[in-house]
Image (tube, rainbow, N blue to C red; front, side):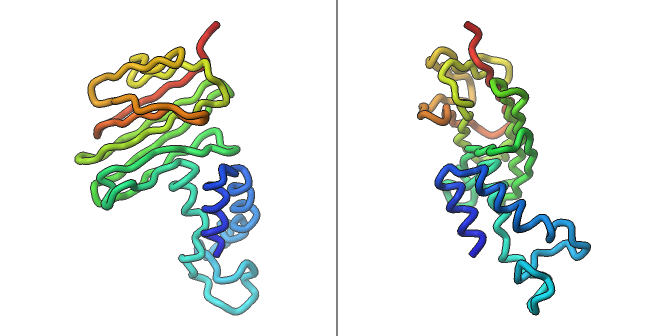
Length: 185
């Protein structure tokens, strides 16, 4: 059931709570020389030492990094990260289309970078976190694509919209380097 608790916390926007819960429950298992997930929280209770479906931390790639399919076979997928307390994450998500590689870095409270490499025959919806500010500039591959709440498209990248938490773009396969900073005043 832990998988569902962690996923519910992320779905409620409680990334820090989800991360703290995983740390509290899984640190002892991560440090165990057996390198497996246990059937019970206490290894001394009978049960198996290899209980892979006890995998609440799957949420790290699905929610902390934010890679989730939106169509079968990852033909379309999203990368909408919830960093919580993390300042850097790198993940490789294997799919039937090929690996999706994502690197996230919160360099300062007002400077965020994201690198996404998408496999062929896919389209990704990328959500760039707003970092709590409305005055942001976002660049993709060194080209300004969003500034002062105005957007522009470049080949392979289309602006989709915004909400209070993210600025969204659809991107074609390949490597994309996003750089977001607070707009200088």
